[in-house]
Image (cartoon, rainbow, N blue to C red; front, side, top):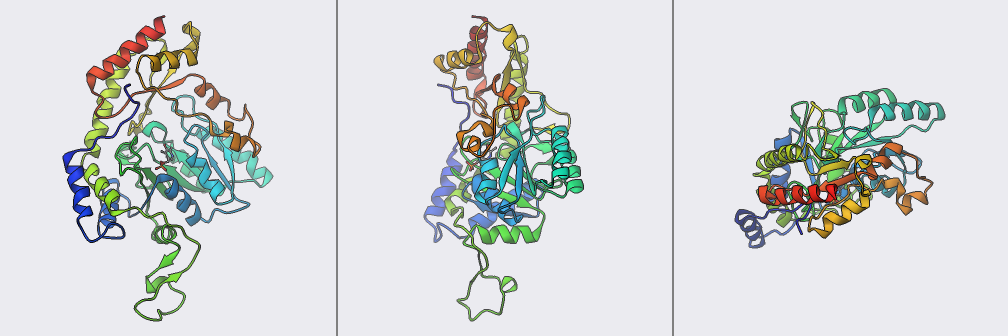
Length: 386
Ligand SMILES: *Cc1c(COP(=O)(O)O)cnc(C)c1O
């Protein structure tokens, strides 16, 4: 089976992890800060807080922005459930804004319409989570302008997007947001096995997230409510968690980061090749907005079902039967039983449901190679013409 995504581990990665295993610190040592500084420098953010997953990063981002019971978080329905669950962890209500039919990202026009209605009803969101699906940036300038007008804060869920750019600048520099979050799960662009990071330009948000990842505890006298009792002293200022990244994970991430730009370039070469090889088939290849240089975590095609004899499900199953590890990113989050039980209904976001009925993620990872890519194209060509 050719998987849809796969990590690459090099001898240099292994050596970096072994070096940490032989050192004094397995956690809370010098490598996590080095990894944070390297990612922050790479993307142009002032501060970075490494944690044990992007899910954890989203959670502490919401907490740092003050999200709580009675507040609302809005996000895209076409995303992994974590983009929405972070609001629920904080006790907030979660609502969904339909997608743009070309980028499949949260649609700024739909967002504006929903904001107008919410303003009249006094139901405005406190936080909007903009998800950069497949690695292509949302229209951040438009979302940021709406944030200024309607007073919501912005988290970029950039789990797919490290190494990508928006308007010529790296995603993660938070020019149009409060906080951006990366994932280092093995299917993502670079990996730490499990791991995530929150980036921000705001020193107060960074300090708050750094405390929240470690029990809400500070050892910085400047953050304390009174002078330390002695050199042993620490203070718990709020209810935090243990979301720390280990030194082993950070060493792996630091080593992988050296190859980030090469990985994204290789993904672009593969995507360009898919675009050409698939151009005569009854499907839509991923459209790229001119403002975007995508991280290309995913390569999502949409079937033109009116030109095909088989159903979406038939095509999907036939590809799997031929050893092509296709996937579907994503089931609209509000169709999950958990969200239906909270009041969401089929039909809430029609564009997202149309997408769900036609989308298939083809294998896309930097070590895919042309031979395996040709096998994917061959299988798809056969399946669509049968
Ligand atoms: C993978 C992913 C997450 C969660 O990442 P973890 O590091 O596995 O917690 C969140 N949002 C999106 C869009 C993702 O793809």
